[in-house]
Image (spheres, rainbow, N blue to C red):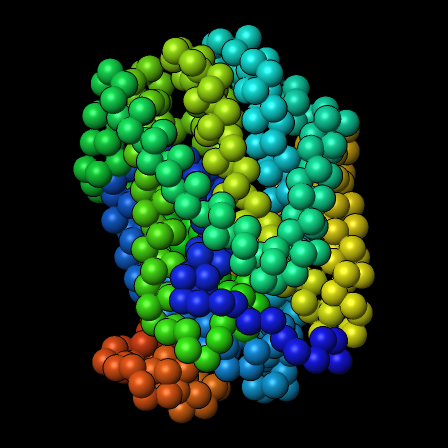
Length: 450
Ligand code: PHE
């Protein structure tokens, strides 16, 4: 069913940039700094890097293996390898849908902050208090955030409708380098602010007295969210890799780029925060409330602010594209709907869900699921339950169920590459990842406390 000939990505660079495009997103620039800020900075960074190496790399390689070996959407890929495990493919489809339900909303906010920076409106809000009010007024408004959410969904749609090569591949190749340059420029600007080095110290000096059991759990969840693993997104993208793509190198490059962007985002945000004497623990509003007040103290503040929010838009867009693609190619290949129609259905359904979740921050706030509004429950269910569960099951599948020869063939490129760490990979997939991930999963469900 679906298209007879499947798209494949051009070269090695495309594979890395497309996968890094999915990984690098609001998770790196919005979520990482505030979670690191709440968990003591440097100590969190050390634990986070440990999680990336122990959990991130093995699960990423497992997903690459499943995708590249089958060249199918996530449901089709699991079904082909083992009928019993096709439910994991559905986990991927459901998680992608639910993540888009809140990710589009936050992406819409970045669009609004960008336009307000361009028009200069943002510079009218000078103090943190006024900024916090503005943020609250905007996000709870019944109309404006919904409009920006819809615009962002349409932007994503345009890229998906252009197809894998002309849309996804080209846009990542264009946007990723721009993103990187902007991030470096902003980090330099921030570090050179008075007292800026204090922020770097906070990021790089580990103070383990701030570490609690929750720090480890936050770091694990953040590693999964940031690498886009545990929900089949990387299965979908690697299904477009060609047979010459070196999976090991691609995985290492993606992990390095993703971590580098998170660290650079920290190096951009903390020096600025310290320079104006604000606490780095202000949580999710760090980027939308704290930073704009800092920009306002700078010469050409609106310009810096515009660059920063453009950076967030590009990072968010390459991630929403990957989530949208999981759903589009699923409908296309499994339901036999043409790619165009599939993309339209996905845009329609995700836009409706995201609009409802935006409204749940304001006028529909009374509607609660287990005490949380729709926006918060989508965030909670995906990041705290579905991703760790998906990651745990993916590692069990790759470690115990999948024919070891398939794993070895894909990782070693059919014997062409050395796979010296193959034994270690199998141990990590079989024992380490499931145990660690199961504990985060049970902890998040509140089944045990630390
Ligand atoms: N990794 C993306 C980020 O850091 C979010 C994402 C999660 C994208 C899962 C796709 C799949 O923002």
